[in-house]
Amino acid sequence: MELRVSDAPAEDAAAWLARRLRGAVQRRGRASLAVSGGSTAPPMFDALLECGVPWEAVEIWQVDERVVPDGHRARNSTQLVVLPATAHPMPVTAPDLDAAADDYAAGLPERFDVVHLGLGEDGHTASWPPGDPVVDSRAQCAVVGTFNGFERMTLTPRVVNGARSRLLLVAGGGKAPMVRRWLLRDPQLPVDRVRRSDTWAFIDPAAAAQLPASATG
Image (cartoon, rainbow, N blue to C red; front, side, top):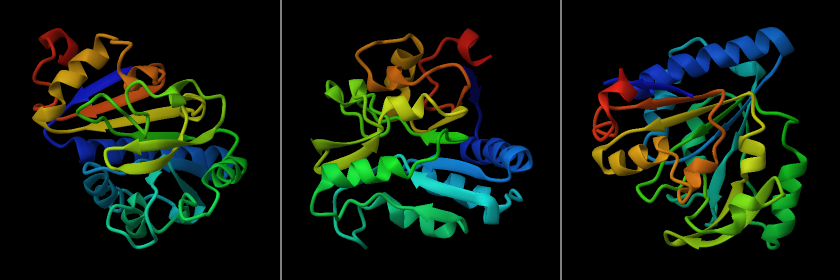
């Protein structure tokens, strides 16, 4: 895993992501990206718009979504409107969520070029709640029960770890204890299920505050 600590992690992550997407388009003609919601995603998306991405050749899926009506402010999909790519929002308004998750899985690319993730103050990533069996699911997309106030649909570790690369973007001092526990490989944290090889973590100094100097140097 590559760990990069900087004062502008969203901009640095966007520049890295843009290079990955351009490379995928050059090699395969298309690029596939799965994105998470959360507070760090919008600044990365804004920076990404300035990075010369060939959007006409990029398709975007969601890593996870809250089960709320279309247009609800809690929907992660509302963050995607700024990106001029073909988007595939999760079908969280379907009457049969389990069947909808299976349908969404059927439309996923064989292998994502990049999966973008965040990190919660409880150690979750995607919508993998601490202690939830979704981390062991053999499905590609699953529905989880109420977590932080919402039922959710999420890609599973099987899909995330099958991607060509993963990007974690973490900011804020409230994340510092989880960043430390994650890098020390605490198996109790859902984020520990993320494959470390071909994974890049972009972290601001506040989130990296509890790491030893050797880890951030």
